[in-house]
Length: 213
Image 1 (tube, rainbow, N blue to C red):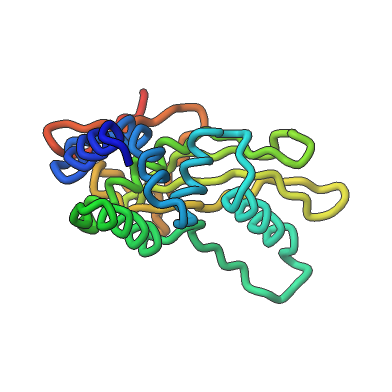
Image 2 (image 1 turned 180 degrees about the vertical axis):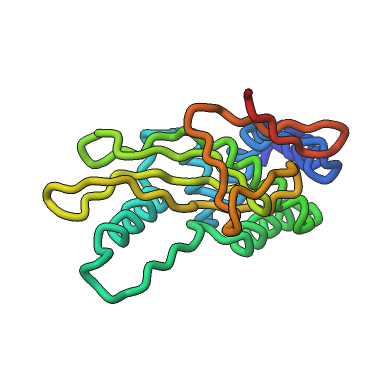
């Protein structure tokens, strides 16, 4: 690591620990994080996904395809449909804090990791999901419920040769400690923002979720 890169890392780490960062800071921090954590799968995959957007090919795209297949097999197998985040909170926290420790920084608390993850979710919204023929078959959206902030995928599913529908499922989740959201129903079904771009900003050391009216 050269002196300039160290200076940039110091700057972003300061914002993380002080709680003054927002999604734009995380966008700038990710490439630096990858340079220091090349052996960590989620760091490499998320950074590539963020920077290449719809042109990305990697673990996250494979995860989206595999989950799509699970929906397409519904009714044809007895297997229960179980969907987990592409990267768990535990994996993200362990990886991020390992990179920070390798750079002689102290690790981040669960609350700060949750803030980091919330910014990631916002950055990844509106990315198109492309098939092998470069045809758009879905998209990632920002979603929020009373309890969670969610990166939601909506993807085209073929259940037989003639019937097509869309499946919606979570890709990444964080706790919602930012916005007071009224529950839609007893299941706390999230609000999905298909036609609006949500922004995660920072006001006086606290993240705020800005939803355009």
